[in-house]
Length: 278
Image 1 (tube, one colour):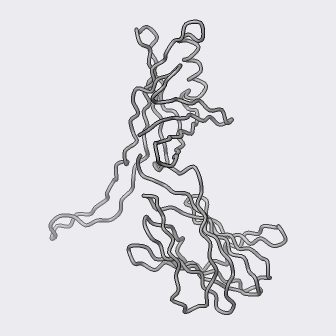
Image 2: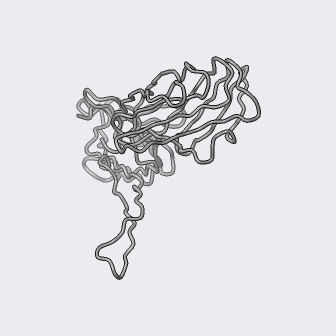
Image 3: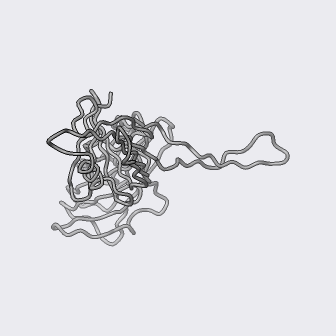
């Protein structure tokens, strides 16, 4: 069960809205927590029944909060409390919403306030706030790290990474060279049994021991960097053009890092669980 909603503005200020023990504000209703609608694109052909699937895309999320404003004699009046809500939920402002549930990890989502309706001349003052979340997924508040070491090319040894989110997610992959090498491949398969590969090759020279290669497959923030002596350099060119930007899928993902010559280069995969609905 949902126990607490927190509104977080850009400067870090937090307004906490308890569900079961309200003080100044009582959350009456929250809409838009279910999985969002999926738009499916199809093509019709004159000589074929039905339609042919082409693509699909999930819509953005619209969260609507209905909050009752509780006036406490001697402490805060309705107008003061309405202004307090304005600080966090004025239309056009960006806000992060954090949801805490019993026995379930805390998840958050970011959006922009579309509208704020709070009639003044009513017996029980309420505010209805519409927030548009352009990324429809909820993110777990903590990251998860998975570690391993590389194996020799041709090895059939894979490690099982259990991803508990309900929506596929990108990750930050870091490998540290413990010897001279010039290439490695990250391989992954999930429940669809499709083998996906990311191959890195530095044809300009060997990686030195202690170098780190950092790869982000997070949508909207993809990159390939080399860290040498604490200096970061973009080496996106070293990623094979046929490579997949691998993501983790719900359930078990088999992963392996393979090198042609040396083995036992340590690596980590850091990711954030994403869910499509609460």
